[in-house]
Length: 542
Ligand code: G6P
Ligand code: ZN
Image (cartoon, rainbow, N blue to C red; front, side):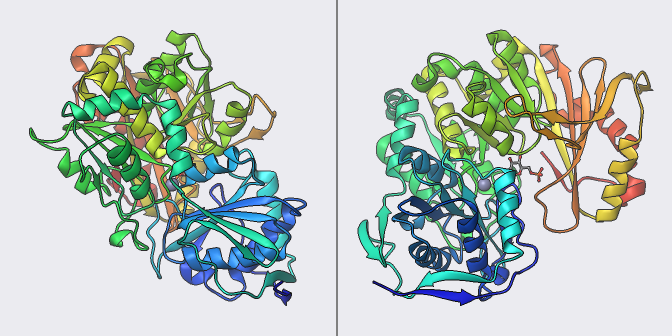
């Protein structure tokens, strides 16, 4: 058996995991002992590892394989009985969550920096997910961080690298490494939730779609599920081979970065349906021919049609959305007579609601949609849910969404991002907004019902989260919301979310920038955006 070596080390500052784990440049992770310190801190913080099984995999970005070899040798030194690794080191974030739950493992380590670019000069990331399949809650990430600040050694075995490309079991020290098909379990779960027969029949009858994997992790998943199992024509999956640098792309499924897909869905000859997912497979964007579905509307439409999907035929227990997400899903919940939950931004806030059976579908305006089938948001799940609905209803994406608006009214919605602004100016702007007391004031044609800084008390565990975004809510339910991005890397990003409810179907076709023009001006003036940031226009509008 390989000897366990104890390597002396000293703490690195800043190894504090955020909501989505520790994210740094590859060059930071590649420093001697950097990854090792963090992994040892994880192992030291999660309890007794003896005899346990761990899942390991990542989105295939640069440094993935190197990191996995290190983690395997450290797991072997720390007493794990077995590590399950996706073949080639590949595991999408939702697939990792699926496998952790299915095999009841002692959680997993996911290597990803989500939608951030990859490559030697770009980003890398690592996070630990708990046995329930979701990201570690704050108590655990705090403990991991505290451990990184006092670490003085780590354990690793000396051994040759493990073959990650051949399915099967092999020994590593006293541990077993099981290389498994990263797609099979996930594909089987999807098959249990959606009407594959109806979708297969739609493709056979000429329904056409494009899925843009953006050279990221969903390529193999989408090819297997859409082309092999559902019979979509070869070539349905675009950019389907995962590349270490995502083909120099920015694997974020939005109208700006998924431009190949947007182009493919434009014009008379375009396919019926288009979708994209991000670096690690948890985000999604949904398009029809010449039609963009906002993530908020996507959640609402899927919830309204959930019973068409076999896995949800018995209905939903509740719908949860993050605060800045539009209230469109709440209208569906009201009609269905089920609870609508409003949580702070961040998928982790859905975990307790899902575990407690209080919600079945969840979603965020930041291109995240999912359900209680795993504990991460799930890009391909959303795509398959849409395919299921389209296959059964046999209508276009645009027809389904506009009919939804006619039935429920339209929550006209837009997000304006001001990226890379000065951090102090951004903080000052938020402080200024926090200090306003606007109740009863008239702004343009709107009267303010209330304004606050959103605070949330988790209905399951009672934990309280404060300062989650400034809301200015008007008497007719329209609102503007301001928050600073928690995921940006350079300076600060101010996000302004603008929403107005439009019951009048003759106005549903209007461009949101037009329909929301007065609220957009009110938001800019209220926050003194130009005076405080020097910006006259947002950098990104979605
Ligand atoms: C990540 C999280 C999401 C969250 C998003 C917010 O993607 O997984 O749950 O909605 O960040 O990003 P922001 O940049 O607006 O803080
Ligand atoms: Zn992601």
